[in-house]
Every structure is written in structure tokens, then in C-alpha cells.
Image (cartoon, rainbow, N blue to C red):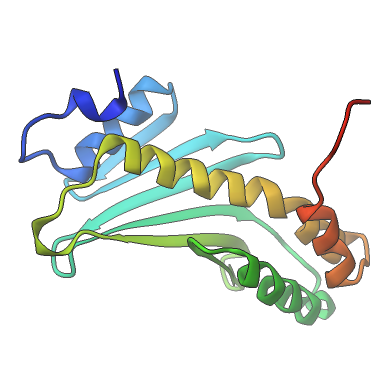
Length: 166
């Protein structure tokens, strides 16, 4: 049975679906309000903070996935350079650095205009894509910020795929 088959009524709130997914996956979560939920999702590199919020005004389910990053001030230009390179590779969502909060952020908005409904499968994919993007590019960000790597070289590490077996 697919995740979508659990929600067959037309009036399921998208955040209710997210809450059910969080319970199913045993993620720590906090239902902040009727239209917002925050959770922690464990990745290979770190635990990611994910917040999803429903905006009825523009009929958008917004996802924000964050992790801490505290680069030295002199590293910021190179961090911004790799952010541009990474975002050229991201077809769904985009990264930004919130300097005041010292957070790397992946953002995406799922538009559900005209009364469209989000399925559990869509929301699960949305969360999975955010974590996968953060996991994929985390090493490149680290190489630039802490390893003094050139952004283009660091990006090659992130997008390289392993072939064969070790």
C-alpha cells in the first residue's frame, strides 16, 4: 500500500499528513500550530531541522531544512560562490545561508493552487529530497569553509558518483 492510500478523504490538511509521516518514520517532531510542524531527521552527516508550514493565503506548503554552519568571516565570499554553483545543480529547491542565524538552509515551496491536494507520497518525496540535497552538498560546503578548497573542486566531490566496489 502506498503512503497516499492512507489519506482518501478530500479534507486532509497537509500538516496532518506530515505529522503522520513523522510518526511513521519515528522522527522527533513538534506540531507548532495548525499550519506548522518542526522535526528532526537524522542524516549520515548530521541531524537536519525540518520545518513545514502551510500558507492558505498563497496555497503553498513551504519546507525549510537547516543545519548549523559557522564559517569565518573571510570564508563567506567562497561560501556564497559554492552556493551559486550548488543552486545551478538543484532543480527542486535552493540553498541559502542565513548569516545572522549561522544556518545553511534548503528551501522549497510546493504550490497547491486551485484547491489541489498534496499526497503523502509527494510530501515524503519533498522531505526526502531536502535531506538528500543537504547530505549531498554538505561535504562540499565543509571543504570550502574548513578545508580551504576551491568551490569548483569541492563541488566535484559532491557530485561525483562512486562506481564499482571497494
